[in-house]
Length: 285
Image: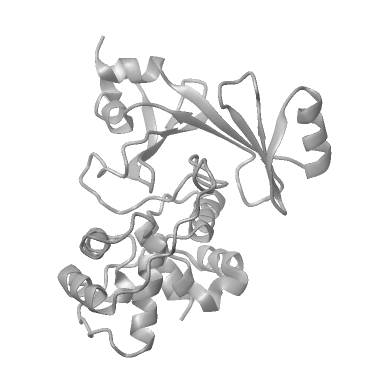
């Protein structure tokens, strides 16, 4: 049996995100049938099934997200994509890299959609694109932090290393997020840094350096912006709300991931993170 076939048969149903009419009655229902609340936020509650080998249900009331989203962990998303014709699997979103691995969206013969996720560590997608896709909805499957409570110091900014890595990337800061050039920047800057350095922190440090006027100017034509209708642009403006004037804080944050998911779900578009970032930059001017 080839690996792609094994990947399907060894799939693990890990998380089910459900949009409910009212949060507390739904929580009481799932607790009554044996689920345990493991995390509670203002509008999101995560419950675990003690008998379900780590399976979780995430309840939320956000009307801008799909009513139901299934997440399935498989060993190799890209491998399944390569074998899609032989296995007769319909992909409605090809593999894209997230912070924890590859993600794709498939549809079963009855029309049910599910998100496939693996733990490959953000490999490039099969068609060569290196744009980073949104992490999975309602937080990444890996959770909010480490399993154990040790706290590591936040890496401090290294201005000289930031400038060197930025020049090596060769792309202006406004056009940098979610591109292969950002990955080049991050790999240069992260070399020798603590493992707690994240893309979000590196981006913030880069912006702070620019505010001081110490970031060299890189000129170049930015990438093309996706074409959108007036209605789609208005929907994004409404979706951004108060974050419209704070767009530079969005890249590589959970807020960006949620906004991208909501926008694509609401409009039926399949914008990549880079395309969405360019669109956010356009409407935030």
